[in-house]
Amino acid sequence: MTHQFEYHPYLNQRTLIESTRSLGMVVTAYCAMAIGRVFAEPVLADIAAARGRSVAQVVLRWLIQQPGTIALSRTTDPQRVAENVAVFDFDLTPEEMERIHALARPRSRIVDPPGLAPVWDSTG
Image (cartoon, rainbow, N blue to C red; front, top):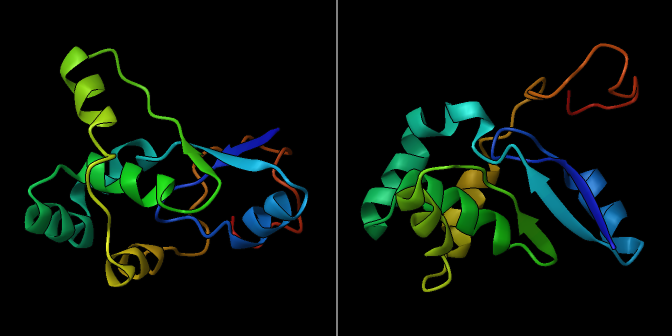
């Protein structure tokens, strides 16, 4: 079983992730690129440059390197599809993972149709 929800570097979903995993489910993260916001992020650009990777690859690696997490990424460009799957031959360091986690900010939810996000959701 999986629980699919918005998850990207700017959105702290720790509580939802912990509760999903406690129920024996895996996390399926969508909106990983934060509708393009990640591409202008200096922290991600620095990590990508140091590793000879793209920002998208760093974000996808950050997601899948978290236990029990599946990353969804959408593209119709064959070159980007190939780039997106080329994330299994490197690991981010614990420091890099933490630098990315530290990007989370309150009110960073992107997919937020009126009336659908719970009022108790402190990430939004």
